[in-house]
Amino acid sequence: MASTTATPFGTSSNDYIDQVISQVKAKNPAEPEFHQAVREVLDSLRLVLKRHPEYQSAKILERIVEPERVILFRVPWIDDHGNVQVNRGFRIEMNSAIGPYKGGLRFHPSVNLGILKFLAFEQVFKNSLTTLMMGGGKGGSDFDPKGKSDNEVMRFCQSFMTELARHIGPDTDVPAGDIGVGGREIGYLFGQYKRLKNEFTGVLTGKGLNWGGSLIRPEATGYGCVYFAAEMLKTKGDSLEGKECLVSGSGNVSQYTVEKLLDLGAKPITLSDSSGVIFDPEGIDREKLHWVMELKNMRRGRIREYAEKFRKAEFLPTNVELDHNPLWKIKADCAFPSATQNEINAADAANLIKNGCKLVSEGANMPSTADATNLFLDAKIFYGPAKAANAGGVATSGLEMSQNSMRLGWTREEVDKRLHTIMCAIHKTCYDTAEAYGTPGNLVNGANIGGFLKVANAMMDQGLV
Ligand code: NDP
Ligand code: 2IT
Image (cartoon, rainbow, N blue to C red; front, top):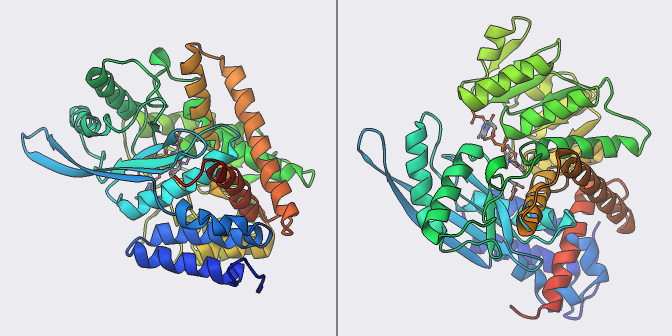
């Protein structure tokens, strides 16, 4: 909606926001994912600045798009053949207004500064929505764990942590997992941190259960994303019972999304990895899910093996020539993108809507392009944006930090109950905020504004730092 609302400086809030977006692009060239994430949040904030020009005079937007600190470092290591390898390590400490920097580490060959800045930026608002006190950060490396031996992964993690250790701490910055970083990597990283610092602290989350980890943390992102979907449906008296569901990816988030969908009586019918998609019209049941977990977490194999093992399933190989992903062309009631950013483009969104998909709940971070998001909003389907729908992972990391501080551990039931309560609270914040700002049902605005206000007010309280 065009507006000419006056601000103390005579510039309309819309013009001001356009200026900030232009500055972000000019100052951070070649970071398209960061531009995309910033534009989405700032577009929602047009509604806020009209009511709160004080954020403009305090330059909250200019400050919030600038990381508090960016750490970039060399990670040298020796492979199994005795060759020297060199990767790049990063940690983006984005915002600490409401708590220590918190966010995952991603190990994937596509990792670069712009991708980690988009993830760190998203994390600031996501962590604010969780109701817990956590700032935002993200890190990682262009290291590719695929095809590496356990010893190579260990040597890489030790070298990575040798530098990272001086920048993090249980009250400063608490990393966790993300793509390519699971229990194995967190173990090697924790071991090296403890050795360097001679301290056993909650400096990482996603730890093993015997050494400070929390029950339900591995499950939390997938479970939380399904709880969020159930909350969206509940507003119209509906449930997941009997719904056919598309799930992409086949890693941590996808696996536990499938598990919780089964718990709630839904029928998951797809999974994928970078090699392609499997479509199982009979449904992925618990036995097949168990087989996938063994394939992905132990044997580290490719998803195409699923179609060789379960003969009713079809394998659709990745085809970069296509303008769409065949996964999103399969008819279903609900979609749970759980692989990576921009995995749903406008053509995919149009296919989902055309085939009657009524709900999208984002497990991955920013899985929909801006055009795809707009199509979902225009179609008025239930659309749970990533920073709300996948916040269960980091929320349970926050619960792991609390347990570490108290030096005790809650039961599975206790943590799951808290996770469920948090996901319901996040949905309520998004739903109520969307309504309060005049865009009922638009959970993108609800999440962006709801996440922003807490951080912005903390920044106002703490002065110019
Ligand atoms: P995993 O490494 O466990 O799994 C990632 C999955 O996505 C794999 O199946 C992988 O396939 C696929 N994938 C990754 N990158 C690409 C790509 N460029 N193209 C095609 N497929 C790809 O990661 P997670 O499950 O932890 O993370 C998945 C998503 O969820 C990410 O967006 C992450 O940021 C987000 N997320 C994760 C949280 C967590 O707690 N782990 C919390 C909140 C969000 P392949 O093996 O072939 O690469
Ligand atoms: O994107 C995310 O929220 C995560 N990868 C989890 C971060 C965390 O600190 O648990």
